[in-house]
Length: 240
Image (cartoon, rainbow, N blue to C red; front, side, top):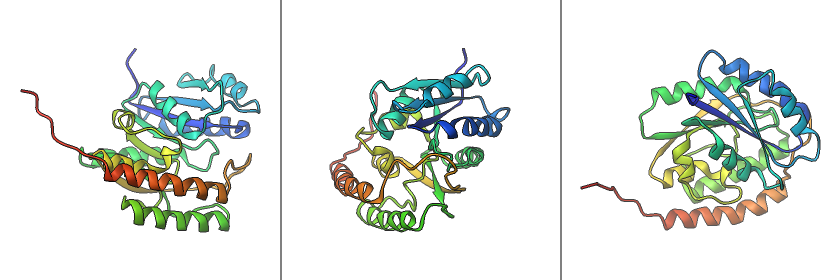
């Protein structure tokens, strides 16, 4: 079987009401444009998200479903989805429906127009639809991160991204790494580009994060990523 060009990886935890609409939007955005698959990773949901996903498979042949036997978090779900993916390029979406799959072709067009050394195209939510407190917290987190990591990325928390699978799997893995992909990709010697994308309000389910918890974890992670950057060493390799 010829592998697809693109794998769309979507991590979910307790998102049963958002699954079918988002799968339908992914299919509408990509079918007929590019050979693709959809890899959903259910992070041991406590609702019937897994059953909803399985019920969609007969009507959506592009859909694959992975299931964590133990809840392991979003970064692990993304990584396991990428490891299982068959496409050379990966698009990620948050499972809450706030990312618009119609932006994936925009990211693909940006990739096709970019130099080969650009390996990550990060969504940039220019008109966020979150609560005021979440926008305020994100704005300050982005400023602190940008000052510490100098990753030249206005919005690393956006779930919609496009990147090369091989490059991603070569990055150091740790919990919450998905929030630092631009800095990690740049650390590996590649370039990144931010692309303006749509952002939508959540229409079902509840957020899995709170501002305080995200901030406490983020401080520790920022220090770790900054350390990784200072300890990186790259060199060209020749075979002779």
